[in-house]
Length: 264
Image 1 (cartoon, rainbow, N blue to C red):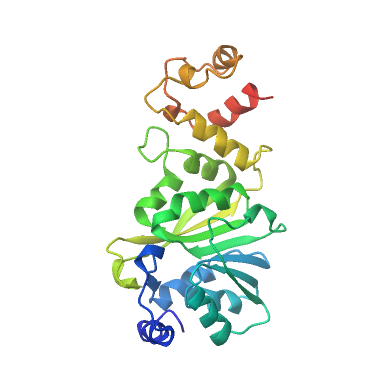
Image 2 (cartoon, rainbow, N blue to C red):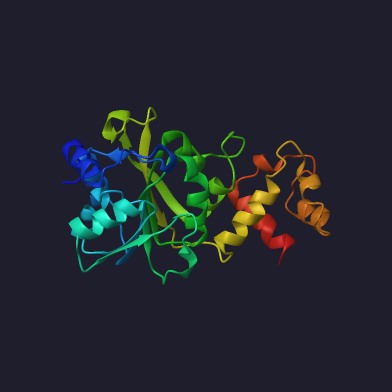
C-alpha cells in the first residue's frame, strides 16, 4: 500500500526531493482510513483525480475498476507514477488542477482528490461548476465548513449555496494531523458529495457567479446589492423579502428563486 510512511519516504528519496510546501504537499500515510473512504464512494467509470502525488489514492481507485485521469503539477511525481504504477486505466497529466477544464470532461464523471489547502476554495468552485456526478475531497476541516455553512454563518457563501442545491454532502472520515507526512498542523476531513436527482435547471456555474455578486458586499442590504437589476424591487416584494435584509441571511432555495425571477 502506498499510503504508508515507509513508502512515502522511499518515494521522496527516489525522486531526490522533499515535500514542497509551496505546492501544499502533505502525503496521506493512513492507508486504512483512506481505503475506508474509497469503499464508501459512488464512482462513475470516468474519474478525474486531483493531486495524486505518489499514488496512495490512485491505486485504491484503480482497484475499484474505474478509469483514472490524474492531474499532477509536480513533474517528478508524474514520472514516478508513470514508472511505478503502469496501468491501462491510468493516464497521468502534468498540469495545474486549477486550470484543468472540468467542464470539458464528458459526462458522467467523478472527481476525487487530496486537495492542496491553499487553493481548496477556488479548486472546489471550479469542480462544482462542472457538476460532476460525485465529488470526493480531502480538505482542511476549516475549509470543509464552507460546504455545510448555513445562512448567517461566517463561512456561508457561494460554495455553501451550490453544494446545498446540487449535492447531498457529508463528512466520510476525519483525518488527524498524524495521518500525513509531513504533519500539516491542521485537522483534515474527507468530504463526499453525490449529485442530487432533483438538481435545479440553472447551471451551477451561473448560480455560483450570481451568489458571488449577491454576497460580495456582506454589510450592504440586499436592495443595494441588486441595484443592477431593474426589477429588483418587484421581485423582492413578490418573494416577501424585506429590502433592508442582508443577502447572507437568505437560504440557498430563496437565492435560487431570486435568481430565477430576476433573470427569467
